Image (tube, rainbow, N blue to C red; front, side, top):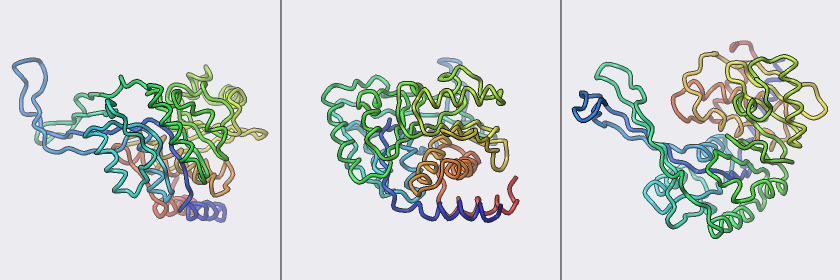
Length: 336
């Protein structure tokens, strides 16, 4: 057993330098932290004094940052506006050393942004009071769609893998993502609402809710029903492997020609925050596959990576050193 986990750590040590393209919905996450001063006389809502603002990459942008943190040469393809939010998001990429040359800056486009207000009293923990979303009304005109397609063509040159990160903003459909995925040597899908719109990719990583919507089965029930539904969905989508993330129940891997593999969680089953964990999972999973790991080996590595980031608040990343240490610790029986 110890040798097996050392082998997985060896895979992680080879993550650096692999070229991965992320085609997806680039979103800015903005957090406003403050203190509740009093209740407003204008409406039954608290008056919040903002003390801190934090900007983070969200949705497909979080996948980009996870890949970069793991050592990949990552190329994002997506659309942002010529606005402050677009500047902020590309600025975060620049700071991380991400190639932004294939990001389309569209005139009149509103960079999708999720603004969260978190506040509490002076001596109480901060809680989310409201989330305000913008940029959901953007339209993919033929001109924007064609520009994105040209960007994909250029980005895929010499790329080892393509990740489609579809959060439902319309990019995947407008850019004909499935067509480009079939051209890639390795293609992986993370789709919030439209997994059944894609066919013929290498693999996909739905969570339990997404799996249930696509298969009609409840992944929480487990057992033979889950296994039948998982293999059926994998076949319908023409995937070589389907990896279902199941929260505190771990993961289930359905691979063509093999028995289903159920992987238990790593560490505590009490997650601090699952935000963005799926982005971490697909990043580590795809990089392991780029290193010629088997689907099962890649799933085990992704499981450990996901277990790390759910211990933290908000979208988070891990790195090869931390991931290797956690894998090796698990192999020695330190982690349960």
